[in-house]
Amino acid sequence: MSATVLVPTFDLPSFERSSLELSCDRPRRAARRSVALPARAARPLRLTRRGRLLLTCTAASALTAAVVALTGAVAGATAGHQEVRVPAVHTVLAGQTMSSIATRWAPEQDWREVAAEIVRINGLSSMHLQAGQRLTLPDQD
Image (cartoon, rainbow, N blue to C red):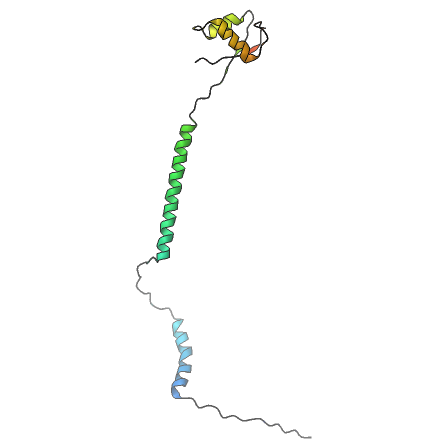
């Protein structure tokens, strides 16, 4: 048994000389490009409109942040400088009376008014004191 194989034959297109040269030159050009080229003269840096806008906004933000931080530091320093009054506390010693404590605490005022204020501040029921008792004294204006 024999088999016959028919293979179609095609006419190949004719190429012009210029197209063959171009096809042959392409690999050469690629090879030439891989070679290091001499450095070009440095061109001056140019900012685009978007770049100038970005640079301006960044600088304005940094300046605003610095002003806010400085203002906050100054305001915080002056706000924290308020005097805090701590109430005076007196521990009653043996033999002390309300009148002697009031007279020593506010010698320019009437001792009865000062003693009444001490009783009111401490929530005492009377002017009788015991040794070791702690009394909060009124502010002296």
